[in-house]
Amino acid sequence: MRFRHSVFKDEAKLDINYIPEHLPHREKEHRLLTEFFNFILNFPEKMTQRVIVTGEIGTGKTALCQRFGANMTIEANKHGVNFRYIHVNCREYRGKLSLILQHAVNVLMPNFPKRGFSAEEILGTLLQNLDEENTHLILALDEFDVLIENEGADAVYNLTRLQEMRSGKPQRLSFIFIMRDLSVTKRLDDSARSTLQRNIIRLEKYGKDQLVDILNERVQLAFEPATIPEDVVSFAADIAQNESGNARFAIELLWRAGKYADAEDQRVVTPDCLRKAVSSIIPTLQKNEIESLNFHEKLFLLAAAEVFKDKEKAYATLMEIEKAYAVACEEFEEQPNSHTMLWKYVQMFSALGILKTEISGTAQRGRSTLIYLPAVSAEELTQTLRASLQRGRK
Ligand SMILES: Nc1ncnc2c1ncn2[C@@H]1O[C@H](COP(=O)(O)OP(=O)(O)O)[C@@H](O)[C@H]1O
Ligand SMILES: [Mg+2]
Image (cartoon, rainbow, N blue to C red):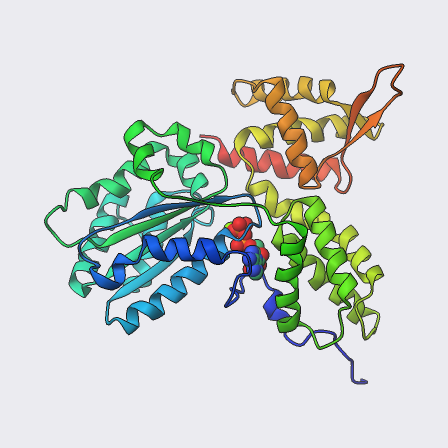
């Protein structure tokens, strides 16, 4: 076997689980988080804090919180404060509070039995352990939307109540709630909502120049010098920005483009490698993103997929999809959302690159918007969505 060159120096730096030391264009938000939790360094047992971090997919919510948690741990050590940061993805535990808390307890107490306890009992054990170890914990609940969808307001109430009953005793447990869609908090009662909405950090989508900065830092870590021309980075940022302002998409694009370069034994990642990456990435991206949609967004996309599945033609009108959506709502016993809302869905899916729109007709004969599914089989999409909707059903 002959020696093969690779454009990569350290591919792992492009992995979704890698948390960069420095997050360009999130410095302000990082400082804000640090401000909110600064008390931990000085009087950790005197108070607790709850913060919401929100933003669209790929705006850096997970990375920001994990970076903050790691930095805070280092600072707390320097101050001689016992502090732990635990990050749990609620989707991984199917939005079940007991499983989520079980995971948190097992991080602190690896021998704690894996089953048989209610959420409340586990929370009690957790607080007891924090007391014994004289520790302050920030529990970051990622994809918190899934927990609320699954358990409703009760879960939030239970999470925060035990703590409140401890007035007089040392304070131990703070929260970061990470969520894409703040509208799910509307389902909470007033007191649960007001406890949550005091401190909101909103991450805006990245613009092209911001994506260029993010990619450039990552390129230095992951690629050999001079393997990615500047205009390829700019091109990747353009595509990602047009699709959704999503940093995850941008990074995955470069990784795949690098894979195409390696496969073809090229020393440099060319624009054509990037184009190949674009056409291969969209379907895989969808699988991750579908799970992040809310119930009605999934219903709407299911309706669209059903229309395209049954149709020979590539294009459909919103009216056709709207009819199918009404049928889907009936099937899943949901009240349909308004026409205006459905338009918003079309725009969102088009921003994510899942659906595309095109204007047809001429000014004289009346224009209409046609919708199409650019890059995935309607059959597969229907199956994925149906499975996901069944799981999300109560
Ligand atoms: N400001 C940033 N600087 C560097 N990398 C970033 C930045 N924002 C996001 N990323 C990277 O983009 C990807 C998606 O970010 P992530 O935190 O998972 O987004 P979210 O949780 O909002 O969907 C991750 O690989 C993350 O490391
Ligand atoms: Mg995330």
